[in-house]
Length: 291
Image 1 (cartoon, rainbow, N blue to C red):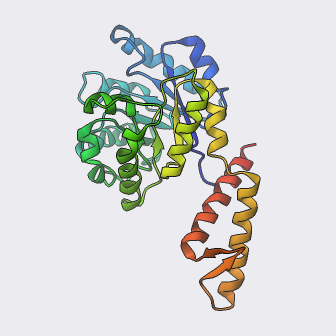
Image 2 (image 1 turned 180 degrees about the vertical axis):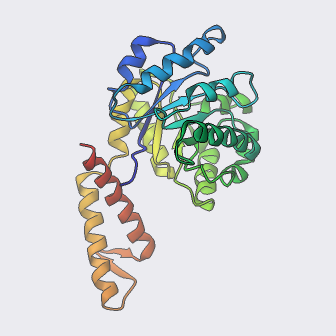
Image 3 (image 1 turned 135 degrees about the vertical axis):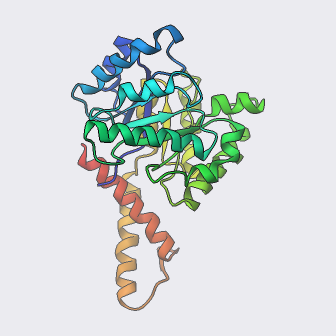
């Protein structure tokens, strides 16, 4: 059964009350933060807090966002948090395939140390600088551990001097390149950027819809109120499932009759359309299995 990747919710690892509540938010993945949300003086002590939180029973996957690979914190962040309680490491500000390989090497050695299967822990890079975007096609083929990448527009717009508008036209080229690079590398579609205006739910919804239209499979979230909105947008509707089921069934019959291109209710259908329909069914099935 496919993993759900509609919503990734950040929470500061050193905020006990938020950590306690975040796993009940309905998101698919919780990312407990050791980077931007945690003061330098608290980074070391927060590692143990995160591990204890991840050891508790939960309904969703649990990741940790470590500090960037070029900081003095990254090695200790990964070493302290990797274990059977962890589902993934979120690595910020990735700017080269070498950055990814360094983290992968460390995680691989720690997996062996604690007796975990090889590549059992995800490695999720955030692409959020000009250098990272420029190297994205090398990054996406950097390691077999990599399943998907995500986009961080906050640092990206800062790095390039862009004005981050509600319409997000300035992000179009970056979004398109991330989706294209992911497809070329034959990894999963990427996860879209956070939206920092936490009281603008209508605009957040439009941002999430835009990401889906561009080909992303989910959204990074920074507030629990954003989770249900993004989940709804990335969840196939009842009509979507009916349409997909009809496409697959009609094409299967046509294929048995020797045809690989048909029309269904005036809609041209061939193998790519059937593959798209199957993705809808797979997501719907994964959601149903977790209900």
